[in-house]
Length: 151
Figure 1 (cartoon, rainbow, N blue to C red):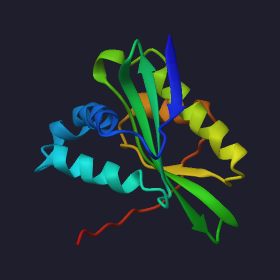
Figure 2: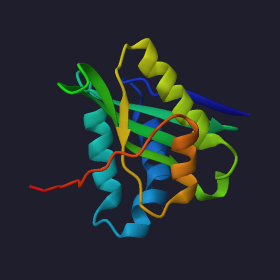
Figure 3: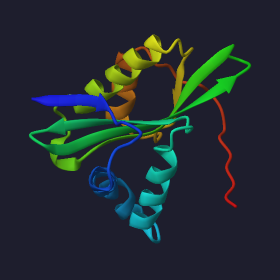
């Protein structure tokens, strides 16, 4: 059975390491330099009491098998708070079992309880399985061109 829940802000270092180890499966293949340290730093920032970041995990038999990492932001367009879903990740060995859907449904439920106005995210153009998941839960395409910069 898969249990999905939000990670407490005061989680211990061992649990942070478990989350980082899970996300390494997503980051390592793209060859991020110092990926593990980058993940730990991000988790430290995300789990500060005043952070608008939230992490939800899926756990199966005491093993973290998936996670959702999101930030709450404000939008004039939405008239309030919305979520930017940075990452929705399920470990390769546990895919196609409905875990991503369970994670996303928990995030949606939480967002509704918090009176959040919507969720936005980005996925690969050719990621048909992920697009099908999002569409099945009422998400729709937004035509835009995303830009970025790193400092």
